Image (cartoon, rainbow, N blue to C red; front, side, top):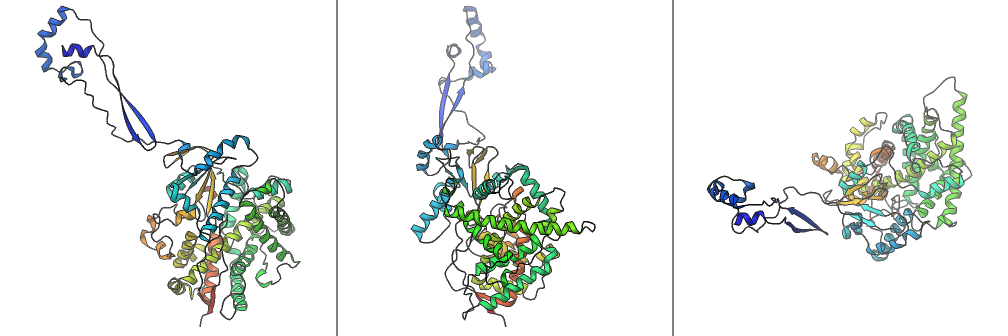
Length: 576
């Protein structure tokens, strides 16, 4: 009778619940049922006769072995844990912004970049008011919300902040042939509205135009310093001589050291871009009427204006602000002066068409390339190179001298390596092999203070980060500075320790824990130029001076380019 009742059981659907994280997952177990049979008396007799056989032979899916406590059901056990992808709305972040997102459909003029700028501005103001000093503000967000933080924009697309090297690697792996990153909107607006063309430089253009520019500039930039090796050494020598002349009685600079390093970078870049020695280090009157001095002044003011425009709320999109007025004025001057140099080089090359020569500058290399660029396009590209290249190199060089002056043991080891070294940069790989500790000091400096602390990408397709689904079109802000200062990525992460890069276990560091030059298709093409310039100047300075620093800690300023937040009062003491 027990078997007869079992055959007439209705299909059962049993549910059991498993609670994990935020979601309640319901798994269904469906019991196999047997269709009821119509049995007459003969059938019952037949079953009774064969009862012994049924007990010995497992038939009917083993139903004869069922005990009297038949209703008990054993839940299904999952042998493999399937990854759970949470929806985008579950990404943690400030809740107040999520409430404001209801207005998103009604405000269309202000975009995602405004939210990014407002985010940075708010963090900086809050940090200054609470701590009275600029600190790494984004780390506070990661400490509170975890490695993936979502900022819901009430006026544009959402922004996701990340700082885990695995997540950064995954974002870079999603890049296509034409990676899309957030542009400098102020420069983009300037070129569209005031130059009457959409063509942009390396940092404001996307897609095929960007790939065309990069392919033309890659090889010439990689070896741009080779034709001017001796001239670059001469500029570094001029820097050490100027330090000697402008020191006070404490062997410190009475002027801002960072500005003098900025002039040094400007002179070096003049050789690389135009094969011209601007000699700004020898010019005390920066605002003179000579082209080189006026170009430097315009570059300096345009940089300050761009930083102001890209930070905070973008009011300049709607009306002319002082920062926007300054940007237009000095970018016009800078563009005209760069264009003048390009035209001069083009005319010189046209005079010697019968005797072709190899390019001796980045400008001549672009003029001789198969992809013909006109003078206006080249001037636009070179403006980006000067605005970004000169500022990032001078920033990194300033912090390198600061760390060397602050850490005397590291300075002694470095002097032992370069004290009697002759700089031959015709073979850059050999040069680096001969200065391993110097290269480690440069790498460690750029780990502690990446010149561009935040990298951005616009997702071309959906990606899963920390089990959260991030949809395509989302702006990803990668806080590379915060990543490189995490104890989970580096031991004693906040300490200046060049030796970490010379140890065998250095190969175990995550490849994306420190990427000061970026990664992938949009990686900085000027890496060799920057490292070579910094190496040459460091060698010249240490061969002539012993550095000391006796003041408070210097922190990087908050902005799209990190700069020292206070004057560098480094002492340059003559070596005996």
